[in-house]
Amino acid sequence: MITTAHRPFDDRIFHKEGQTLARGGYEVVIIAPHDRDEIAGGIRIIPLPLRKKNGSLAAAIRAYRMALKTDADVYHIHDPELLAAGVLLKILNGKKVIYDVHEDYGRKILSKETIRKELRPPLSRIFTVLERTAAGMLYYVLAADSNIRKKFGANTEVIGNYPPIDFMVMRPPARSGRTMKMVYIGGIDRDRGSRIMPEIMKHLEGYDIELHMAGPIADKDDILALTSAGKIAYHGFLPWREVSKCLADADIGLLLLQPTPSYINCTGEGIIKLFEYMMMKLPIIVSDFPYLRQLITATGSGICVDPTNPAKIAEAVKFLTGNPEVRRKMGENGRMAVIREYNWEKEGRKLIAVYQKAFGQTQQQGSAVISHDQI
Image (cartoon, rainbow, N blue to C red):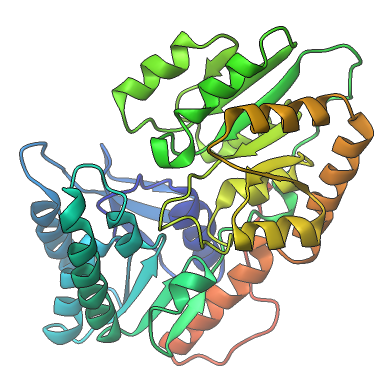
């Protein structure tokens, strides 16, 4: 597995896919930005040195050279900037390459503030064509959600970012009169509501409600916006093993994706925090987008809101705060939905099937998948 943009212990790359493959009998190596060569959970981590003065192209070239030295049977790339390396591995070295698409990168360009507005549509179209063409030359594509899958050809499988069934840790018993805790776990940027959340807290002044946040912050200005608002606690970046502990002490989960082209039509499978909230029995306040509304309505696990309207979001928070039985029921519904449908055990079997095909193996029932308590 190769990545230039993620940590080696990324939840999808290491804790789910990597561990599942290792337990399935495959020798797994991850090349990723890291500070040392090590073996963890049966997986070898090869550190990719990244230099600030060089961009993603230089990093991709270094990753390609390091990948060649492993002489792997299958190469599994996790970033679009590695597509050229993947094509070279296929054409020059005769390797099978899998492209793992975490997000709809073409649509993300349409809301990227570092690019001039008039240039975004043509650049988005050019990128999408190049991405589709390069991916079509590779062995297989793994898509994080169903909408992403539509962009690619027949050899594409949707592998959702669902939690394992045993992700949940023991929740503390409910205490009457305690401070209500909302939680947001994940990347913190404007497209994911970083500027909306402090505004919500202003509408909740006078209420005994806190907001707890954890995850990487993209913009330093967001740190100032968060820390200037009252009753917001930022816990930094949490290792995946610690996420369930943070969620266990919360009462409400927030998922306030903004109506950008890459999010408004997302089908939900790739949004890990959504299903982790559900697994931890948290009622969810979620953006009122078509596919997300369909999911929340079908599971009965939360409330859909206009993610751009802090006052309306605050009203939803007040409603859940004042109705503990509604919170309990939504939480139970969410957990049951994950157990029945939205769990990594099902996705892990799909991943193993792709690799068995790549290695020419006969598919076996009950292939090993990793569980949270075994990591």
